[in-house]
Every structure is written in structure tokens, then in C-alpha cells.
Length: 230
Image (cartoon, rainbow, N blue to C red):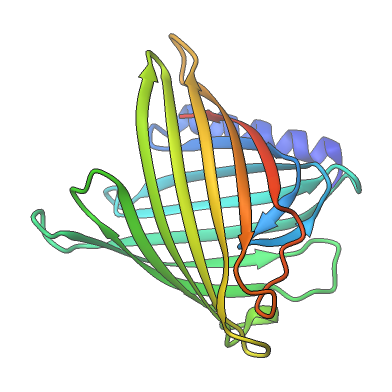
């Protein structure tokens, strides 16, 4: 996919946000493409995404893509949905089930397909969740990935928020060693643009290798600059 198609895709997503009150579009620029602790490539990547909620805000659907500036091509386009499971207003746990399909344009690599289920704690001073992701097709078939996420956000000034987070990953591939694969520490500063629906985020992440037999971490640090239109 060319640069012109990339611009057209982003413009279409912005137009969709304007027409859909519950939609958002985001575009991030990353110093490397890191996925679950693994370095997909160490080039500068542009990652646009679009999502919206439907069916009374119980279901989220969207798409996400990775544009490699070195090859000037989209090398990945993903499609996903997530459904919130009703647990009652006073339930301490929120449950979501969903599905992601990872596609690779211009490559002979077949699509990866992955359903998931996640559990999030409610009414805590921090965000705490655990997700279970299981590959049913493609290169991740019969592979299990578990992510434990911890996050905390605080307003530091008007229209400025600081976010801190950590992810502990556990990998059980169809072939290879199982175990804790990595820990990712993240920090981000979100700046809202006054009198607009835009925000700009500046982020940094550090990936810690926990077991080289499970995953060798190639890139320790990577950086992100992004914008979101609500």
C-alpha cells in the first residue's frame, strides 16, 4: 500500500469520526515496532487506528495498521472486535471477549487469528487486568499468551495527564520454551488541545528481558508520539 493510500485511509477515518459520536481515530509514530516484547522491526513506523462502539456501547469494533517508513508500505493491517459481558452494576470484575485478525499485505504469510478473554478489576485506584489470548490459525496457532497489565493515571495540570503502566507477559507457544517472556514499563504524557477534540501523547517504553530462552529482547527503549481525535 502506497503513501497516497495511507493518506486516503487516514482521511477516511477522520471523516468517520466526525459522523460517529462514539468513534475515535489515533495515529502514532514509533521509533520501532515492538509487539509483546518482540522487535518486529527497528524502523520508524506510523500506526493509524480507528475504533467505534455499537450495540448500545457493548461492542467495540475497529482496525489498526502498521506503516513501515523504510519500505513505504503497510506491512500489517489488523481487524478486531470486543464484547463486554454483563456482570451486574456492583460486580468487582469486568469481562470482555473478543477476536483479532492480523493480516500482512504484500506477504505470503497467512493471517493470524486470535480470540481472547480479559478480566479487569473495577473500583480500584489503579487499573488492573489480565488477558488470555489463544491463536487458532496462522503462525500463532495453538499458542497462548497471557498479559497482566497495571496502570495509573493522574492529572498534572489543566488538559495534561500523566500515565504510568507495566505489562508482564507470559508465553506458551506451540513450539519452543514457555515462561515469562518480558516486562514492559511505560510512561506517557497526554496533552489535550484546548477547545478541540484532539490530544497529543508523548510516550516512552522500556522492555525488560526476563527469560532469553522464551524471548530475546532486541530493543530495550522505544518512543512514541501520537495524536487522537475523539
